[in-house]
Length: 263
Image 1 (tube, rainbow, N blue to C red):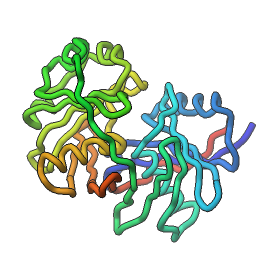
Image 2 (cartoon, one colour; image 1 turned 45 degrees about the vertical axis):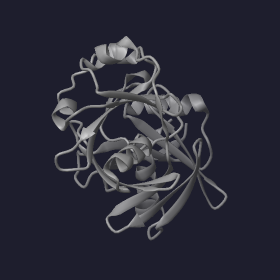
Image 3 (cartoon, rainbow, N blue to C red; image 1 turned 45 degrees about the horizontal axis):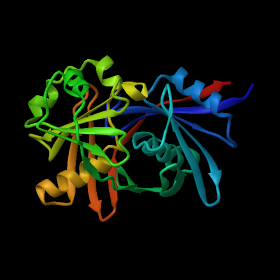
């Protein structure tokens, strides 16, 4: 049995109990995949991040309670916070190697800034009936992220997005996540993200989907810097900027837990 350090960090928020909580488990070497998946299930958070030293940075992986994912924003932010503030105080930049390539995070004032890939959006030839049935609403536009991992749905107003009360069983049958977005009243855009297909009914704050949201709203609003509010129950705030084929995604983080697990 091994004793491992574990942290729980609230990401994309400046207040405790806000944003999206992520577990972070630094490792000296990899555990087997089944054990990491079991830890993710035991934590029962949207994501548990594991990282090990590699070359001049770290190799980073993310697990939901059900699956390993290729890209995760809030758990990357949380991992950088743990490195900068607890494991290596004074460090201000880190490079993570991931299934989505190299991702860097830098400290900038009270925010951490991530450099993520830009996602393109594609037209959807035939919109599945389960999408509108699952959302219990009809979006004005439906697109798909480039890997077909998410439906990108656009609504007329923030109120429309706030009012969504999904049938998660129907959405799960899509085999993809669902991004729901609209213009915001106090921000450039608002968003909610439903991912029962990945073991998460509604994610409180999702960095990865802003790889698609930022270029969409940048093009629509004709500006590169996008302020996004994820209007989940916990609420998350993200500051994004389109930089060519990359997207900078920034947010605050707050530590909730510092402890140990025995596995």
